[in-house]
Length: 504
Image (cartoon, rainbow, N blue to C red; front, side):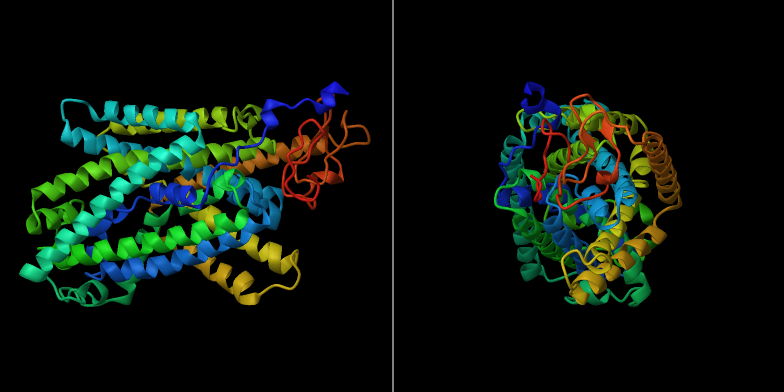
């Protein structure tokens, strides 16, 4: 009987130590409060000068996705995020695909952030190669994540506070210049266009398809659902709050930057080389070089800690998928409530990708071109999960149609439209990654079906949770209990049970 009651490390739960503030810190860190800085020029040129309107529309568009996360985190408050939600709403197969597609971005978005940090630090200290700065950023933030989620949240809060202070300095300086010297463009031009190319709804929507990528990362909050104190409602509030705050910050800074810009959107469109540094050029021309350097330093440090939040979310996703036997079981191990093997694997993949890109002149272009499709496909499956759980299965009783059908359908329409507008490279990489995931699903189903029979398991089958059961003898129960049951956790033998539903 001792073997049945001993706790086993690979199934130990995550430690509940995060509060509402910690969740918001992780979300804002991953997104980065000044995320529009790098794409301001591109969006200004594409939207014909209506860059603030672009972010207003993008915030509303992404609100549908945030709302779907808020619905599903209450249904399945677990670490797997969209992987868990798709399993609940659509079934095992779509769950695996959702997690697999999200994994692509959870591993590559931090690589892009680390590379941004390395490039910025190399510009400030050119004697040190950018790949060295990039690798150093990976090592430092990985050590913080291994230290524990609470410790990383404390350091992250300090970095986020620094980013907010820099943003406030920019706002005060910009307002001071505008009051003293006036605006370079019309006061309403960031919302209506600067007139150099004429207002175009199609141009604004085309820019929105790029702007929504600035919000990637707020969904990482849901990955910490098993580590928050106070229940899933706190996670849902944090997701919505984080999106609202970033929307206000993005609209405010792009509005002010557009008013300060010494060049028109038509000039930016005619000279794409100016688009990348357009924000910095506007700041330097109107306020001074000191603010240019301050923003650059903030972006260098902030990018590294955006990657910290992304790496933490990636580790939780790998952990959750391994716990459900979709990835090697080693990744489901925890130590002191921290999924260290999963974090180390995520860090290794990210390190290789970031350093490889840092050593190439076109490395950043390669990474940036492929980081969005995975998350967008996962978001689409998230919206489908809301419809599947609340409308098709009616698992919560009679659905509220605007909340459980209209909102997720609109959200899916947005994400599909952005996928269609994505670069050809991103679509090809996404399709290849999807094909690999489908192959993995076929192999795993084949193994499960081959193991079916009256005596395929050597131990008791699953409990009321979602996952397969493992008995003391190491066999896997593959009978009817494999399908989702009333619980929302991983059902297994008494030695390893981590259900969070009624079967807990």
